[in-house]
Length: 455
Ligand code: BGC
Image (cartoon, rainbow, N blue to C red; front, side):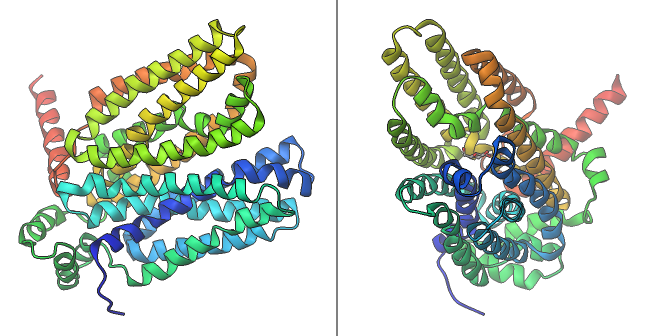
């Protein structure tokens, strides 16, 4: 079907999977309170219902990258949208704990798929000078999805069976995504790689409007010498540094504590001495700050570059966590001070995470891997991200009980490790075409081999 659509619509729809990622992971924090009563969950089944989406996400991200290498980005995003629809209806109508868990896993498969496919699709259709900003639309959609989830939680909190509406609401954006993808173009580089040069040219000239596309086609040609790579190629050749960067960023994004702050902000705030309703409203406030700072990062990412943003983020987040620890350790007796200080430093943590590690990690995962191993590379990194997310979320309540606010010191230390990792290993990708990034990696590898031989 040939319908002319503007570029901004293409990018917005391309990023819509991010909204479902954010909504479906965010909605459970409110819904679980009511599911617990309705389906009579104990603490074990409650934990499983909450975290089963993360297990599904690991499966989804493991398979979707490689599938999209074979069948195309667009087709697999459409299949994810169908799975999102099934998951939304299935969880909303579940009448037993078992079916709820099964459909949460199904939903997770789609979430994992979106986390792998959206950054890859956006980075492949965007022009290099604004690729950071356009790929960061994914994170903007994630944060909008989280905020929407908080608002829907709040709106249905007093409705009988409200949790079913909370979970079912996700059907709407999933269905819009499905319809939207019918009209969206396939990734030009994927088409080119599959030998469909003329189709790639048509889509590229639509995307670049009046600009010259010959140099992009040329770059694709140059980067097109290698066949589809396997996992072995990814691990054992010049692409290995990309894998190290991908896995490192994916792991560290979770272990610097972002989701502990997000998932447990209401608990942290209410335990800091403010009431329950302040905690819920505080959550909506946090969600709003999150969306706003992501907009700032969209503006900054192609100007300052990815690496600088990551480093600034680490300094800001580690200092905020250090202050959270200090406030909670030394100001315990005067609770209202410590409550407000806690909110202040939670907010500053979110400010730094939202403007740096939130968007930059997914942007970089979309651009760091050479084409021949892109799907597998992003897939593996996303699996690591979801696994780390699962580990941190499952252990946080227990560790908080045991270590109290000293736990924030651990996340602050992880921030320092992340700083060193970025400083030493991460390469800057700002303003480079995906093919230039690929040449860069190859050149570094050849240089390192030469220096080993010389020694
Ligand atoms: C992270 C998620 C997180 C979300 C919102 C994403 O970049 O990967 O784990 O929930 O941002 O903070």
